[in-house]
Amino acid sequence: MSQASDEVLKQLDRLVALGYPDVADMSAAAFRALASPLVHALELNDVLTDEILLVPTRELVSPESLIARTSINRHAGFTTMPPRDIASFEPTEGFEPPEGPFYLVVQPHTGTCYLNREPDVARKLMESDDRLPLTMEEGLAIATQHTEWLEAKNGFNLLGSRSTDGRVPSIWMSQNSARLGSVWPNSKHTWLGNAYCMARVGVSLLSR
Image (cartoon, rainbow, N blue to C red; front, side):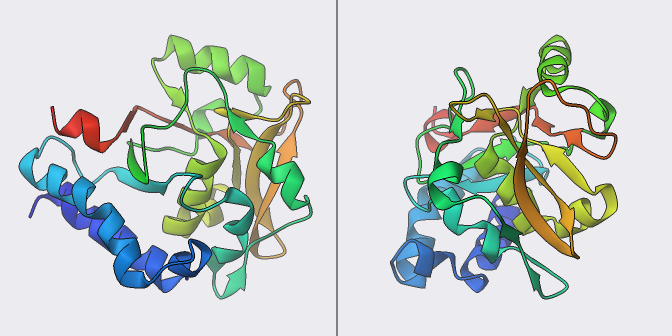
């Protein structure tokens, strides 16, 4: 078993423990089986390290159902945004996820190097640094798999997604829990990074 496939299985275990199969309206065994092609591809193509993040696509689990599945010291995450508002945040052009139901984010980061930057400015800086902004689903995956990142670094914007009114989603610590909210693209926050990754990889890319 490769480092990458082992890491994916660990993250899959956490998703199952947090009740993701219930959100997807299927059994734990069926949920795990959906990730099998990705795990198998990683075992055959050991080119990735364990610096990866397992992300379920929106077709498998809706983002509005996931923030409450995060858990930091037994405090469930929350949002004050209604489900329809959360669903309006779509990946922007060029940052669409690979075909699902699962894919990988390579070398995810909360973007502390882009603190106190307006989202639109931070996005241009990322482009010049050859980095990809994370989407809302990918940010929720960080809050699910790496709660310590959120606790230590407080929060981050997710510039790979945007609502129809121009807002970008954000995740930060509030009341000792993960909170899903949003900011305007021209707003600055000294305590919010702008999260990014180096690549997105799906089964089709690994199987080439």
